[in-house]
Length: 308
Image (cartoon, rainbow, N blue to C red):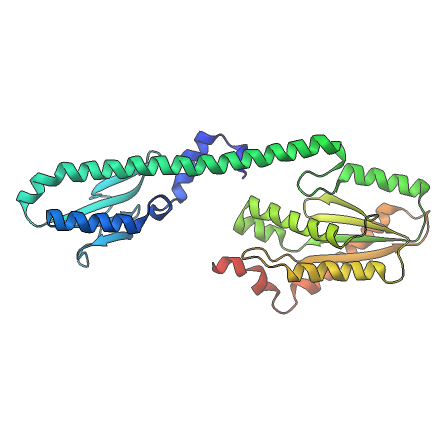
């Protein structure tokens, strides 16, 4: 879910659950400080993640198994949640009496610094998301109700209106093309709304990039696009479909692997109904989808982002 759709304070309460110590602190500097403290006060220090995994260790803790539930040490807390635990081994009880206050202050300091860094990071992300939302709103206001805000393509309502106009004034033949993103739901389930929206926009950009200026392109459903090519030259529509698939395959990204299924039919007469034509194109698209999803290497390419 987008940041801008949830109040900032709620995001701050929820997002801390996914943070680790290395997201908020420079652990190399923490380790250097621990070494200096160890040398100065004769002690060994261990910093663990919220569930007890070692983050920084100075000294020998090979025989120590942190029990963060019953013996949590000194807690490092950010946004009212524990994100780490500080443990210490002292060289002598006398030394302990001298530095207990120092260790308490150290845990409190890391809690304070972590809180500031966390709020800075989350607020910056939130602000960026709000700015993006405002930019979309400005774009929508500029282009009226004709344009899909995410992709810049015609929205379904305006696209359908253009089809009615074509039926009344247009010529034939026309190429009717249906494009559907393969496994959009997989991307949404595994990478979230932001990446699945980016996939839709990526495919839309490819459709625009490979099209001629007079092609009519609309986003008619979440991951479905319709294209009309009026009176195409011989092989023009097939070549367009081929270039779309090649551009998807050539797209390089650490997460996304765009793939589309395409169906195409020809509307031979001005009397033929566009809705029936696109229904046939969708049928051809589903046949192509079966072939695409069963092609060699498809699954590996789709899931490449999971190996990160």
